[in-house]
Length: 184
Figure 1 (spheres, one colour):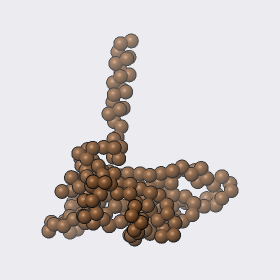
Figure 2 (cartoon, helix red, strand yellow):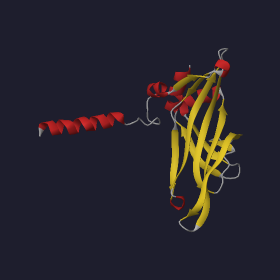
Figure 3 (tube, helix red, strand yellow):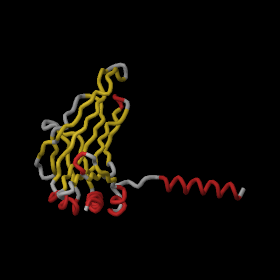
Figure 4 (cartoon, one colour):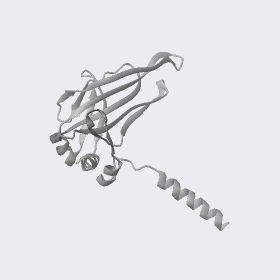
């Protein structure tokens, strides 16, 4: 019986250790260690990608979650100088959306760069409504001074079509700090 208890404890500890830390709550050093670095062959750029953050909500009518995944990317050339962006991947159902703009907390708005818009599938949902599921990819260029300021207070943005606001996403200060530690 004693071996059974030790076995159960060992399984419980192993499964707890296997759980991922939420990047929103992680310390900057932990986030810095999670940033992935690679080198592109073309142009010899170094590229850093932070762990993904996610915002989602459940929609009964369309059998699932509307989810937006977002992360930071940095590119540096051997000559120096870094380019920063936030990449966005959205999966949603219902009406077609256009993530054309991002609104800041101060009310200002900037255009995103749309990379891709795919229709995953269209069908009748709940035998009542014919609609589609979509996958969009976009990015937003971020300046070094903007990231330095956000390193202290975080960054809160609302994805928008210019006419309608969609999801509000946030990049916590600890997340940005960890990313910048890894890149610099």
